Amino acid sequence: QVQLVESGGGLVQPGGSLRLSCAASGSIGSINTMGWYRQGPGKQRELVAGITSRGSTNYADSVKGRFTISRDNAKNTVYLEMNNLKPGDTAVYYCSAYMRPDGSSSYTGYWGQGTQVSVSL
Image 1 (cartoon, rainbow, N blue to C red):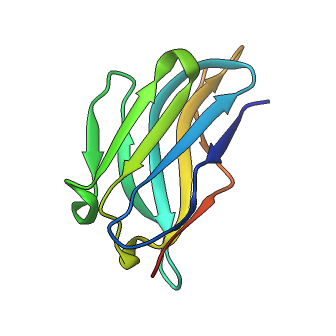
Image 2: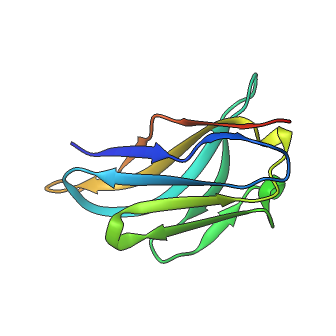
């Protein structure tokens, strides 16, 4: 069984910083793209940032220059460093990954359970 477990959410004041982590565990054969999505109140889920297995990254325009995605392939972990947070960043943040379970020949998309990030005075 393969799963993603997130950590690092919380309440922060505008201008503050948070670091999210997401670790993949279980019988993992390999991991392709990993990423972070978010869903704010009354909004649809949107891509925040993605990173390939080779380290190529992409970001939503709204977070460019403030957020940094990275990954540690040895630990099967992806991170999201969030700086200069704004109230508009308030959302539930979800980790995602395309993973091939050990013994399988195909990749499947997986989601974490989500972690709340709240930006407020």
